[in-house]
Length: 295
Image (cartoon, rainbow, N blue to C red):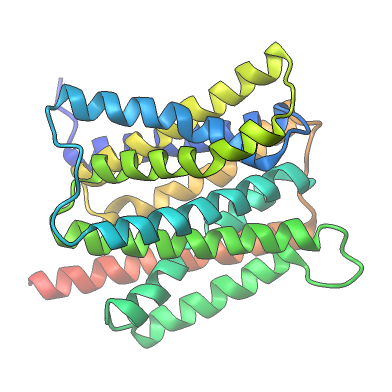
């Protein structure tokens, strides 16, 4: 039997990550009407234990590389805002797939922030893809004063923007030798410390079922983080990142089966297609550019 190639392993890992994050979205909804900070706390508490255990097992230091601390703080602040935006949208939008798609704007925002702060040149076709993805997001958000979901939609869009800023910091630190596993640990610890005071003063009583759902949220989040980290150790992002959009398919299926037969409207479906098309276009564009560079 032939061994799996690194690219195949990377695809399997990124599909597993997408499945984990879709499960996280479903369990967020199933946990009921709990305050968003409380949900965020448990999401990161489980990830904190997982990340700490991995660092201990690999005997890696619990400290950043020289000069990385300001970027860890910036990454953690932006990432936490992104999680808040995503959780709020997931809880308050009628269709979890809509919230998941808005969060998938993060790669395009990463491209924008990388151009602004890391001085990475954005080519005309990349700029066109960003504009196209933004138009697709507007079809999902459907901005109007008559749209009762405008606030959670904007929260989801803002969450994708913040996630893009966080990934830009991760990219910068990775280029300077920072350990990705410590980055996950630091972000999880930062998030737990920031949200813990809310639980102390405004704890919302939970049933045992809600507690189980929140622990599953954290378990899925940890599985998703480590799976996507493993995916990018097997293969470069230009070869596998497009498979991350399978998260939308998983989320839509779970929404239909477990969350009251959710079916996105036609404008949202068109928006999905536009954003996914732009992502696939960028995937092949970047792959072609790399092939020409290496030829």
